[in-house]
Length: 99
Image 1 (cartoon, rainbow, N blue to C red):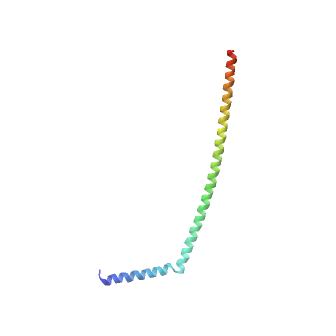
Image 2: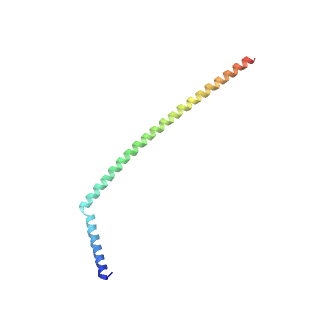
Image 3: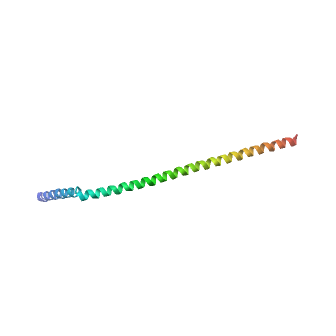
C-alpha cells in the first residue's frame, strides 16, 4: 500500500469518525437515547411489578403449605394417641380376662 493510500484511509477514517460523532451527539440522536432509556425504565418497572407479584404469591403458597403440614402433623399425632389408648385398653382387657 502506498503512502497516499494510507493517508487517504486515515483522512477518510477521521472524517467518518467526526461525522459519526456529530451524528451521535446531535439533538435527534439525544431524543432517540431519551426515548430508548424511557422504554428501558418502563420495562424495568413492569418487570419489578411482576417480580413483586410472584414473590407475594410464593409467600402465600409457602404459608398455606406450612399450615397444611401443621394440620397433617396434628392429625397424625391424634391418631397415634388414639391408637395408644386403644392398645392400652386392649391390654387391660386381656389382663382382666387372664385374672
